Length: 320
Length: 308
Image 1 (spheres, chains in turn yellow, brown):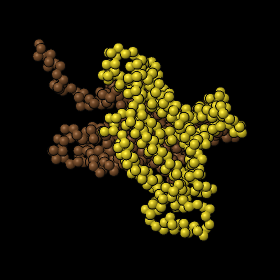
Image 2 (cartoon, chains in turn purple, blue):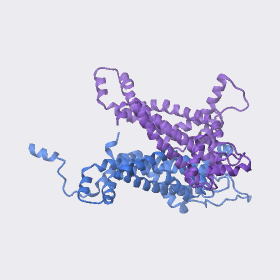
Image 3 (cartoon, rainbow over the protein chains, first blue to last red):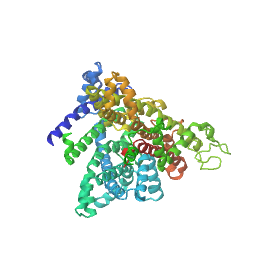
Image 4 (tube, rainbow over the protein chains, first blue to last red):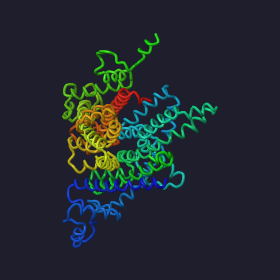
């Protein structure tokens, strides 16, 4: 196991370097000199020349790339064009909200998706299975912004059950349970929007994986030795069927973070997604690029964790 | 007697001169596809949508770009559905059903061009990686690993904010960033086909690599490629509509299903004028749903072995 983890980590290094290269390359497409945004605009003009010199403004792009990398590693993601705020600070402020939203959606996907998949597999080719199949297809096909607007229209504007936007009620000093309920009421709609496609995918995946396990010999053996149907399904079949579902962990991470852009925008959720949208509107290239870099590294880390947990759950993987 | 039965059950003996034999793969796939009710529904809806897009100037009741005035001479803004405007008018007084039809034209063509680009890149890279192996494979797969780390929507959004937004840029950007799945798929298939005896035979005959790859390998992996390209089209429509909804895709006044939904970001429109935002949303949903149905149907029809 240890050697497997080390091997996977070693493989991630060139990808990480590639991510920074690609980000730097896209940055070069932006109008103006992208390196200028790496300099704190608050430093006196007299020193500007010197700092520009240090960052290699008159040197080749390759040289600039290494200086940029050095700045990134020191935690400097640049400064916003209009207000001169450090981007690292902006992202730091927004990160908790996005993590709260994506983690909730993540949990929802598996808590809802797996039982529905099991249910669908147990009723294979009967009406409930067909209904769930169509529902999951609609779930994959519906654009998140349309689904989000629909939910706001129905549950917030018409029925008034949930608030239309934001993360908490502004101006109210809530504590303890009341605060938790307030958060929960705000998160339920955006988390549902974010989770819907993943729920559908997890469900389909669980279903087909379970059906595949059902056809294996050891299940027949378990039946033959007289175990009850419930023990066979939940203790023998499901445990094995859920191993490949782990891959969805990794696959759903870029999906959730990508989806957060639109979902946060629609629900005015104060996370990285709405930060990104306002950066797009205001053409704040340093923010956009920092978000890109940050998210792709998160995705890489997520994939690594998924791979390692897959290998942990299924020892056959480690040796192939 | 016994011998006769054995002969009859021997499938290795080819049936002589069957007229259907030549295109039997396509014909058989079509036979299986026809039996799949959901896929057929999807195919019919998709055909209707494509026809509507093709004949947009003939069937749309109004011009999608002109704002209509009402009797008092004012702009007929946000009018509810009526006999004159079946789906009402938008915030600038333009006929929604006409914009919907023209919007379909834009959305579908953006998606098709984008998929054509991404599929070509994906096939080319996948063939190279799978057939040549060694460092070519390593290089291409590492690049794929890198690009796959960026959520497609993120990447498309960041590149499109750097360039001037236009339909052509949207097509090219979506095409240039969404080739990763196809590359991985084609590479996997080529690795499988490459080891087959017939490929070895062609190689032994002295054919050059180009001929082997394009004439002998590629035709044999067209089935999964077709399915993937179909599903990719749905993905491209989703990406384009999201981009246009956010204002970095297809720009006003050109209608696209995504930018028609922009008005709904105002709570007033969202709550009281559902005819403005519901039709384009339903159009996107319907299109993507039917493409996904057709894609699933194609997968089952082209490769009956993998059917669960």
